[in-house]
Image 1 (cartoon, one colour):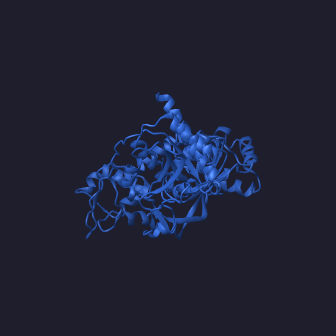
Image 2: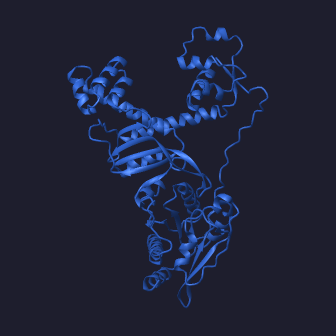
Image 3: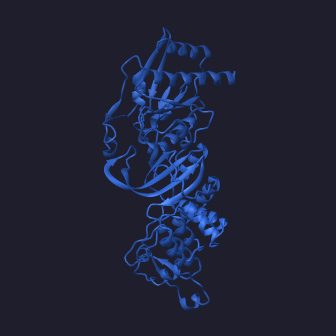
Length: 295
Length: 174
């Protein structure tokens, strides 16, 4: 029977935990969610599976490969991304080895001293982890676990224990939660503090940070800055957090906005213990006999 | 015995399958648009079924309302229960979190034995028992039983397993 559902009800971390504990073999496929007009049992809008977003393979509870839907996950791209092949080298190899499998290509590259076996294993492993850490932050989308479906035999698969992936994934989710708690409203704006020139002296910012800084203006909301720079909500939150902590920017409401109060999380009242009945063993046995006899 | 579980998990059907009387249903048309797409009526107070054991012994089955807004009824039903059954719809992972929460709530009401019934195991989209155990974080010592609520034999098996657990508990404490 298939294991399927939606990430909003059963998170990727929970899925990895399940696959690890059950020692499952197969492929987890995550899809874009296409909203329907129907609602599910708890009132959420039902989603059906759209385009494939990611595919993650497991063997006996170990992670062995992962690929994002739109990404070219072949060996040349993986080594290029890891800095083991230059762009020119990657282009030439792609042209010359169009129909060569990853495994055969790996042998050719090792024999030609382009890369070592260790480079290949480390790069493939890192690629798999990058994909999985990325999808751990996805909060919705239909998924389906295809039992015993594995990638084709010509792919290089590196087994990775899931425990560490789950721990690291949980750490990243916590970081996201902390960033979200610190900056819950992306419709706030940024402004420079007094004497910004002094503060920016001797500071080394990354390209991404400079891109955000170039849009700092009380009229631009953080959401607009993220959109203009093609950044995800997490990326912009992380950058704004760093800039704010360094005293380089201040978070302010945009003109005309009213700051909304943060609501405290409510806790359910703990139930009181109720009285348990005092029933004799013979009573239970009589019920069992009655059910066994004719139901 | 109390039969509990999330909205539309099959509690009323479970009791109807085994009760010797027509189940006393307290169902009302559903007011919420979202819930009305799942089923047209829901239990608002409790369902009530009966199995006569002999002249002086009757087993009553009480089904709790599934929606949280009726949870004031839960404590009333939990009072004096011999054991409880938590129904889970195996095809609806969106209800697993709620099922776990209801389980923990009832566990806190009374230290009585309980079993978890994985309903709708006859449907092709049903999660397997092993997967459900991990998904619901149910300890190995707790019985998680396959169930089809409209099948009398399946329901009988769940009730018997709960009764065996009650007997085991009595042996431990005697």
